[in-house]
Length: 141
Image (cartoon, rainbow, N blue to C red; front, top):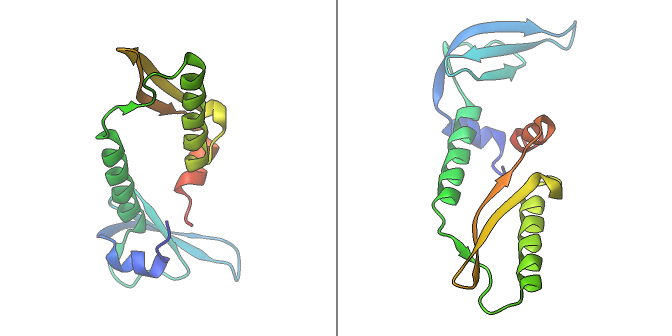
């Protein structure tokens, strides 16, 4: 996400701190604040208040909105009078575009399509994410 962390922190909802955990060795100590929402925030010092901003809640809500917007899209008509080969080529291009968009391997994308009245319709696409892919997509940018 292109928003700086300081801006996100100001816009983030405030959550109660349930537990503060101290980690690290001398000179590299950090405090993990476990929040009521289930997320955690890592800081160099203990927060002075019992409520702190949860940046992950803000990002999670933005991701949910994006997923909802993508799920409301109507079926995409790929071809009309093209040959079968051209339709298959368009499906592969769609797979490649999705793989590039999400930064996952091409074999992690499955495009579901069917022919209706001689037109190829893409019904949906499934993206399989490994634990590494999930970490990469949700990592702070």
